[in-house]
Image: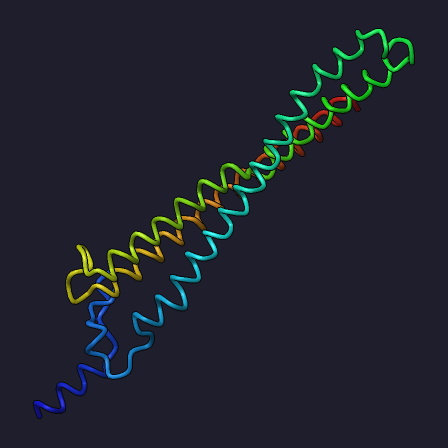
Length: 197
């Protein structure tokens, strides 16, 4: 009878407490996923993805900012060349003014791209998320608090999934704000059209 009860407790579904399943993953007859599998298949891939995206955005941001700096520094130089007698003899003043104007246009375009693509913001956010996940992994692998008890693996999963979910929620909020702005601008345009008619 006692043997039968222990079998039922191992095969019956775990009770839900509202925070997570109250189970000891080691007590399962067949674990769904081991901690090693989770770390290798989920956690490491998430860390690598955030690390890669952070690095890509950092490179893009720095490349654009360096190019902006060079163009911004060259515009006054190009304009100053217009004052030299040699340039005036060959009628290059207009050409240099056009080059300076094009440099200004390039600066505006690059700045707009930086604002739209948000490379700096993404670089920082992805880096923070990556480092948070790394921190949790190291704490788990070393058995440091809060991962020094029997329920360490479920705690790790909860923490990592919460970090990942918060990133997803942030993107949903950004999408909602973008949708709201688009709706507002469309409504304003419709109002203006109605008022004109």
